[in-house]
Length: 213
Image 1 (tube, rainbow, N blue to C red):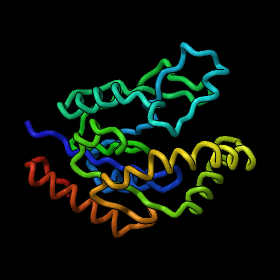
Image 2 (image 1 turned 180 degrees about the horizontal axis):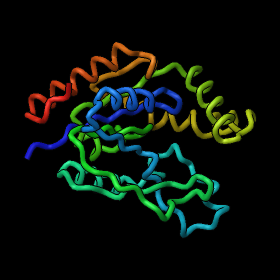
Image 3 (image 1 turned 135 degrees about the vertical axis):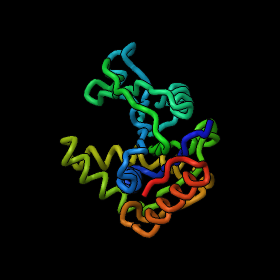
Image 4 (image 1 turned 90 degrees about the horizontal axis):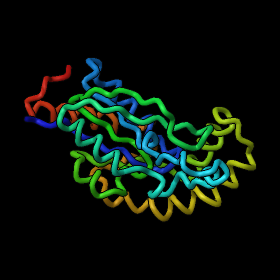
């Protein structure tokens, strides 16, 4: 049985990797593609007191339940549906509800550390790293957290300097070496996105999967 095509899209916080994943998704109008976010696979912390959950470092590899992510990816590769977890950031733990995800011909696995785990890399046909200047990333994160998460400028800057920046340098940036393709400036790089879409369609054709027009 021909397996789905898996594209890993990694990059730092605010790099534009989510935009890249969405732009690729939009290029497949017949919905034969799905996006699987690494952020949905933060570990369940319901066994911990709330005060302890507040200390969670979401930019560290150990924050993710990669065992479950690998298991779910393998099911999707076998064209089996999964029940994707939902993470509740207000409670800093996994929500009780899940989301049913049906298998597709193309799977985009998106997240800051999807290239960090060797098991995930082994399952990818294309590995992408979205590389954006640090000043652009911090501005994007600042605007997002203030607008969407009600954060203060001081709290965003403090978190960036104490957690996000050191974790990026230690864990995220080094995964660039595993990338087959490096996309500068994320979603604004339409040429790179168009090339990605063309490559994915070529692989699908080669695998004798239904052609996407």
